[in-house]
Image (tube, rainbow, N blue to C red; front, side):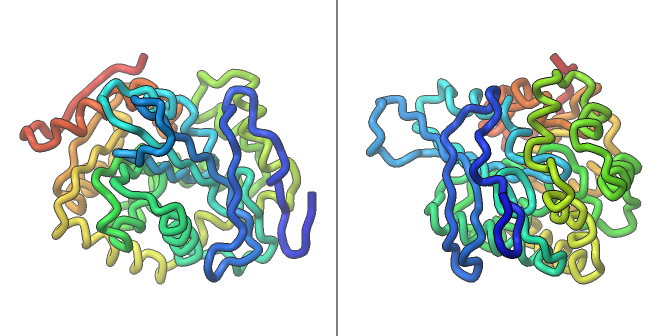
Length: 311
């Protein structure tokens, strides 16, 4: 459907293989009228919905994905046997997924994405948050709301190079955004990045981007986070991690080239090097999530790198 100034997929049902209840907020301060779609699920070991969650997992996707990319991780965290009440929140960034897609290119900026996420987290009153981020944008949030975050999981270093000095853009990230710019269907891009996708999964990736007007945010994502002003903001915000002790797990392909400079910025990080997963680490998310639950309890043990072969 179309509405003034934006393309909207809000009324579209979630794919059959991503069946969770949809939630929408349309009155975030400063973004009134912008409908942001998110999933908000809670599992309580006592089956009591009135018990406050002890641990919240907040998922932040990147490009060319949307919340669907985390579908293999959610069941692991929701059904963790750790004896905790668990909440998972998966928003679609504006311009992606089932959230509204403003038609004005000028709407999209690094500050816009950061502000929307900060306002959403505050509105939902998320606490004791484990951030699961597939984009450098996710890492911009804890410095703004430091008392709400306990751990961070970085799924792939992807666009993290933007916050590093003297690090070249990875070829895969450049290729992805070149394909987006030339209107290659998202399903085709995803298939090249993760060849284990089924036809149903490929179709699901295309759902939010069926029209050209649905792709304005998608096409502008890389541009708005890679301007010189945005990079200065990224580098400034990432400095927060050097003085704030927050456990971080970086899950990357074993041949990833950005991990070392990223670790210099994120000194309290633990690296999980995954053989053969490539760029789309969340597509192997079930095993990564299982390991993450163990690692997050062990990050202070002195172990800094772990290898595993994809399942």
